[in-house]
Structure formats: structure tokens, C-alpha cells
Image (spheres, one colour):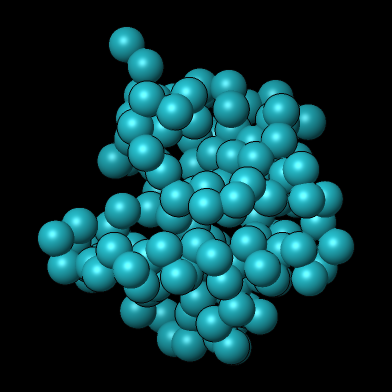
Length: 145
């Protein structure tokens, strides 16, 4: 059975995408540590990041770095947090989020889906897309809302 991430990637479940190419996708998580919290996910459904082929893993990290730079710019954050946990969904993914301290590194403290403001989530995705485009990321890889 396909994971929830595969269903999002395939358009079966809505997602707030900020980046997409043939190897990786990046979309906002529904339970963020902070607004702008994005997941970088390989298109290929592989449970553990340690099982990804090195080229796919390397590409996911390149995308994570692009998204991280965009998050720093879009949210005026001192840092972009980077975290691999992977217990919630059996599909490899990298958490990237605005970070001003260590609190975002505990996924125990995330906003639950019913606590987030949909308009702010949409604005967050738009800000990241805009920052990616300002970095020179190919427009074809930055989906419109």
C-alpha cells in the first residue's frame, strides 16, 4: 500500500508543494514545528534514508539545502533546521524548518493539524517558493500554488 507521502506526490491527497523534480519533492508538513516546516522526500518510496541509493540521497540533500536557504530568507531565520526522524511515515524524508533555537528539533512540540492556520500555511509555502525562485531555481521545479 502506498505511503501518505506517495499519495501526496501522486496528487491523491493535497499538498503544499514548494519544489518538485523527477527525483525529489518538497512540501509543507501538516504538523509543523514552525510555519515553513518542509519535508524533502524522494519520489521513490523507500522506508529508510540509509536504504536510498547514494545518488538519490545526495540529490535529496541538495534539495534540502536549497529549501533551507529559502526558509532562512523567507522567514528571516538565523538557521534552517535539518532533521531525519522517519518513524511517522515509512518513506524516507528530511525535515527542514526555520530555527532560532533547538526547540524545533523535538517533534514532540509540533503544532497539530487543527492548530495551524490554513492561510498562514499557504502564505508560508508561497514565501518559500518565492525565495527559491529568487535563488535562481528553475521555475519548472517550483510549482505554483
